[in-house]
Image (cartoon, rainbow, N blue to C red):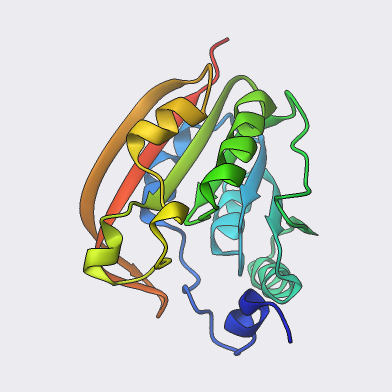
Amino acid sequence: MPPIWDERYAPVDFFYGTEPNDFLREHAGRITPGGAVLSLGEGEGRNAAFLAAGGHRVLALDQSAVGLDKARRLAAARGLAIDTLAADLAEYRIEPGAWDAIVSIWCHLPSGLRRHVYAEVAAGLRPGGVFLLESYTPEQIRLGTGGPKNPDLMPTLAQLRMELPGLVFDVAEERERDVSEGEGHRGRSAVVQVVARRPG
């Protein structure tokens, strides 16, 4: 049986739409112009294409080859190029000091894996590099407008502060907001938003 994400991305339509995440759009200007960006759990490529259109060099990482194929096609349709890599974050290693920005938009990981990956995220940024994250919090289960059903997959701000050692939090907020991203995310949502910077 194909992985669940291959099944979700298989239809022709883009499950989460083709426009970038609002929070990423708002804060992308914090990324070094022309910088190298790693996008975790990129899916069908809407955020990677947006970043590439802004002049960044983007590596879109996801466990779904089906999603990444759509990502490449979306970028190509806009005259853009992105790099893609099908990989499991339980096995992928983020190179230390390699990235001007790392992006995690709705990339929900089990808490044990998340702690490991986010420690690598913190080390993977170059001095001055930023980590941009939007995720559902456990409060999202009550709202039911998208995201996982397991609270272990959804971090709180307090957890993120512990899981990103050495980073300075320039934006750090838990809030409710209206999300409209294709059929996958639609409605009032409980989210945590972070822009965290490596000093230097």
